[in-house]
Length: 293
Image (cartoon, rainbow, N blue to C red):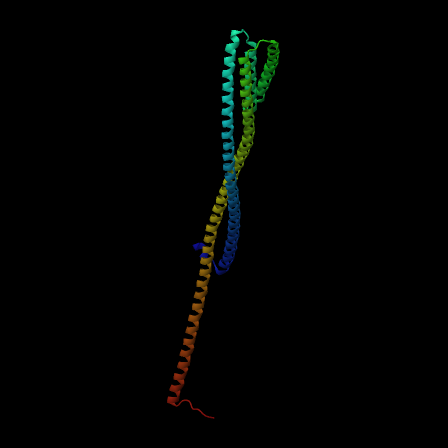
């Protein structure tokens, strides 16, 4: 800086022009970066606001899903209870049929229960395609076997009254189990819908968080660049001020020098006039000059 301030007036004036131009450029770039940072900050805030709304929707969706799952479990427990009671009656009937050496009916009922359980599993348990194909194949095979056994059962003519009552009770229990299972399937499907919606919201929220973080980081970097340019602008402004001060000081020095010269010139003029007057006075006193026509 000292080297610049020692430049001749013309070069110093040129250096001032360059400094002012550079200062203006730095200010414009700084202001543009600040505008960009403001836009990025606003975009970030909009993303965060959208994320907040989705979080509220996600929480409500999760609560609804959990309530549905709770309801599904209640119906599932009832279904299992009816099934358990039905199994006990089947066991009681099997004990009676053993006395008659008639196990075909029992086997058919057990097989029907196995088919029900496989169908329940297929409808409510998430599984891979190959696993589901195996279950479907098993259900078809067991149904064919069940149909074959039931044809043999129809051929049996000796059925006691108490066994008929057990058949009715067993059928009623499994009918109730089927009703509860329909409710299980209904609530399971609803819960899956809300679960899929919940998962989708989680992904969207995660994406918004990522985008908001990117905007925030970009905003910080932009503001940092703006601050760096601001510091350079401040330094350049200091240079402009220093050059202007040097020029003012030089102007004032020149002005003071001229003033001092003017004062000296006036003093010399006054001194000269005074000397002339004194010389004339002396000549008058000596009678060497006279005034008149």
